[in-house]
Length: 472
Image (cartoon, rainbow, N blue to C red; front, side, top):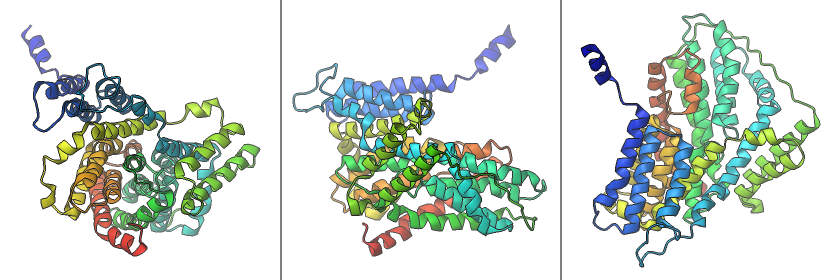
């Protein structure tokens, strides 16, 4: 009996229970304690924000479930349909404004990116392009690694980072299996793929969810960021970082193999549907990159492949079911959270807790970027962007400090994508870790170094380049 009781006492409370319990407790904190300077609507929004923080960090329920919960709570607590009366001085938003987050233009941009990524996989465009693009890199192990990283980074600009990593891992694993067990190139090759995917995703608005989250929040603040402008801001440093990451991985995991015979199967499909997709892919990318010339916004362009591919029968009902709807809902929840924070005045109250004027513009940007990097290392980079981007942009809009909201929002998104130190930091890392060929220590040591170097590139070098190019 004693042993049984002792065993029971040592049982750990499930993380899910702890997370839900903590969220429930924190939800009531703003209703029990009164915070000076915070309105009643702000107290209600603070309760929602605290719940979002706990649920997105601990993940007792799926991230997308938290996202839609945020929308529901905002409707019930701070909209014109709130179930409790709001002060007369507060003008609540029409409840449909929070529902509108589920069809925000940024989601249409991301949806278009998903359709292109799905088509590239369906018609094996990724493998066919990979086979052609790797030819110039020969048989030298170092050059092949560089080729794989450049191709992975390029694909990740327009495809899901996870899909790209899975595709390229299928190419790399047979090569790794043929290497000697003691050859450290095995580790380097596996690490190179997710790291290149993470870096490449920074390059375009559709490359990774934090980019879309930042663009959506900036749009809510009246700042439109074109597809081309994001690329000009992000791509040069991303290319530099890929080369730096390649150099580091080669030095940290040197090869004892002199040559590698890399064989990739893949041919361009010649069916009607494949030709339609190839044309839609090329036209969509060209329209995105020339947005400043024709004036059609990137979100409208992103909706074109959705309509064309469905109308022509290239995509069927089963393809629609394969869309990563949870990611879209997660982005929508972040957009709604940002709206609620601004509508309730919570942003002004939070910002007022710190004397930001004593920091300076560069230091403030760095603080938010480092916070995004740190948070995204241990939680979803989308969730960390959802929490930090609204606060960062609000600070730039309400502070006397000369801060560009575009720079702050951009830096938070980039920093979130640079978090790649742990298997849990990003799904691409998890895919590589599941191969069983790398240890957490190898990933952490390399990922931290690349992440920090990347952050310094964007914080220190990139602004000088933007000034020369006149984009900021």
